[in-house]
Image (cartoon, rainbow, N blue to C red; front, side, top):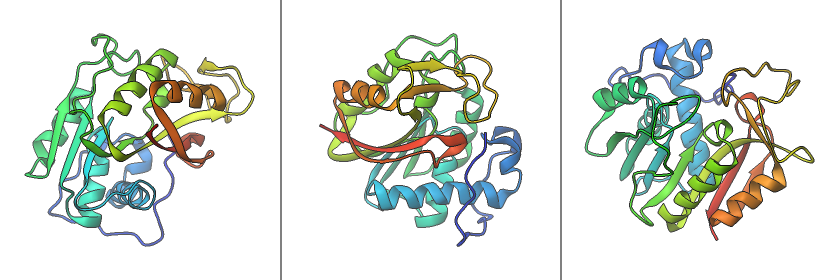
Length: 239
């Protein structure tokens, strides 16, 4: 995993805000330094503020929150939002975040959903724990990049149902033009070695966007290949 470098205007880690141990920082050696980990979260909070309407009064759902990198970034950048809800299927990461970052504005939920890479024994479900039309900003960094078509379609429909009428979903995915619809661990792709279940799922861009459209989501914005390991960025809305 090769995260983007943080913005030039870095924020010094606040000693009052707990940081997860190195072993729980998704991204490994790239986040060995506390400042790098914090500013990666700050960078994404800034992106959400600029592209998805993140603000102090917003309700945020961090789908695939890990150990709370975005929550830590939000706390450093703007203190709190009205409601931050982190959701993940990896108990060790989620439980650290729940034990160390929970407060009156910040909460975490572990779900037992199946994913062949991260939770192979989980239940087959497209459930995301949120009420209908209750999410102003949904953030899913490197989540669809580890899912096949059926899951993208199923979770896409769930996202469409939980987004507020003016809400936005900010997601990343591996997409390319004029490639097969969906390939797991494509060989010789981006000069990286993909191995293990769902390490990289690459979609044809038109196919991916059509799958989301059929699920009830439309593309507001697309930026090609600037995120982790060459993923592309989408801003989505209910259609």
